[in-house]
Image 1 (cartoon, rainbow, N blue to C red):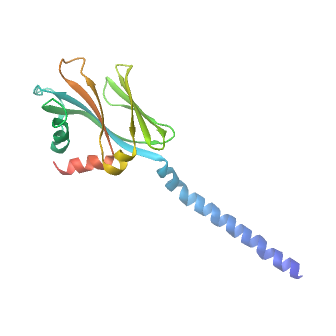
Image 2 (image 1 turned 180 degrees about the vertical axis):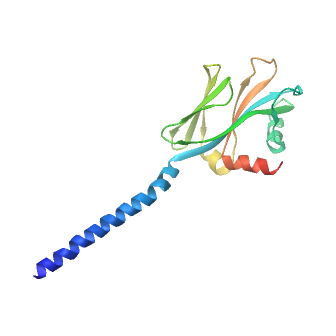
Length: 173
């Protein structure tokens, strides 16, 4: 009789442990999935020495971000063409259309290297790599740029940031 009684609690304990393990897995899955995704913001910016025409729907770049650009680049005016915030699984990457002429493909090459491919008018324009840690932890900007083929002397920039940096720029308006 003792053997029967002692085996019953062992079976019950095993079911309790299995049930607890299933509950932990169920509740931990969203947390694990969140840890496996990457959230970034991208801005497509136009740099020029010309004034914006009245019919352009471009927004002026925030003063804080503009101050970083004018200290490095030669143009006096910077306009935001588009801004997108997106989230993607780290193992898959993400393709994002920034304008009718510009698309980007982002993916992680390893746990700390972000690769960005810039597609302009359906042709690969640039492939660049940047450490991810300074973007996520330090608020650094990852800037990719090139000549504006439609406007001599002007340039385009793709600015990759952590989304919280974008919120900081909104507060200063």
